[in-house]
Length: 168
Image: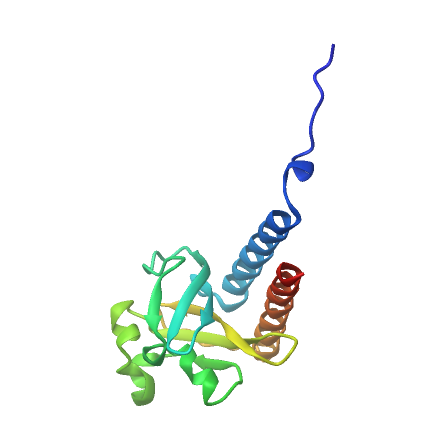
């Protein structure tokens, strides 16, 4: 007699399947962001009123930022999205007086930053998609801001779909 093979999908709830899909999609996007930017760290963070919460990372530089880390939002570079919700590129932070003194820059030895705000389809600012490196970057690709924004929008849609599915 041949043992029956039970599909893993039938053993997982809809919420569990959605969470796995969300993790796989966000991990793939983070890998693509590192390839496109040439940077060695990419991450997704959620904003609360005062905190920056790490949701997912792809970190070949071992920068020390881990999933579930929480930083004071005002100390991060991503907090800029509350002031100006556009993609932000800082090729050499140490030469930029506005950003060089941020505690997070020194804490994680960040020299370059690329980021885009993540908005949910209903317009709420959810968090940020960011890439970091301890090396200076040139960001020569003129399509990079739009590409990063598209990835951030895709992540917002994925999160929103799972948020609304969990509400029903």
